[in-house]
Length: 209
Image 1 (tube, rainbow, N blue to C red):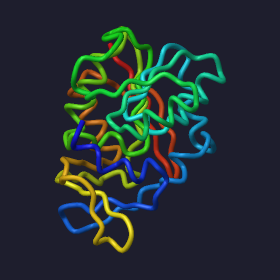
Image 2: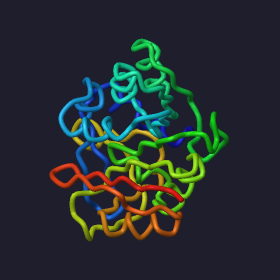
Image 3: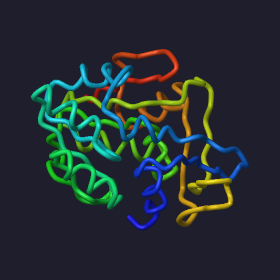
C-alpha cells in the first residue's frame, strides 16, 4: 500500500496530476472524486444490480450512490485519506492491496474499475484477470478506459501538486489503455464485452464466463 500514499493529497481534493515516465502529465479530476456521483457515473451505477466491489474506491462516491440504490457494496483502497472519507460517509471499505486476499473472493456480482483505476499496477491484463477471479460465474467488470481507442501506454508515474515540483511518493507502475487495448487484455482474462458507454468518459461492461 505504500506505493499509493502519493494519492493521499489528490484524494483529499488538492489539485494534482500524474507525471508519467514518458514526460506527459495527466490532470487528476480530484473534484469528481470527492463530490457525489453524477453525470456518466449513472451508467456504472445502473449496471450494478447485485453485490459490488469497487477497486480503488477513493473517497467512496460510488459506494454512497450504490447504498442509496440499495445495492450492497464494498470499497478497496490503499489510502488512509480514502478510509477516513468512507468512514465519514458511512460506507464500507477495506484498506488492502488489490492483488492480495480480499473479502468475498469469487463471490461478487460486479467489480468496478473507474476513474483510471485500470492503470493500477501498470499491467491492465493482470488487473483484469484479478478482477475476473473476484466474480461469480457470469459476473461483470465495469471498467473506465481512455477515450482514445488506440491509446496504450505503460510505465511509471508520480503524483504532482502545486507547480509540479512538489512530488509525492515513489514512482509507481502505471498504465493508460484505450478500448482496443483493454478489450484485448479482457479477452486474455476470459472476459467479453457486453456493453459500451461512449463519449468523453468511456466505459466497458466485461462479462465473465
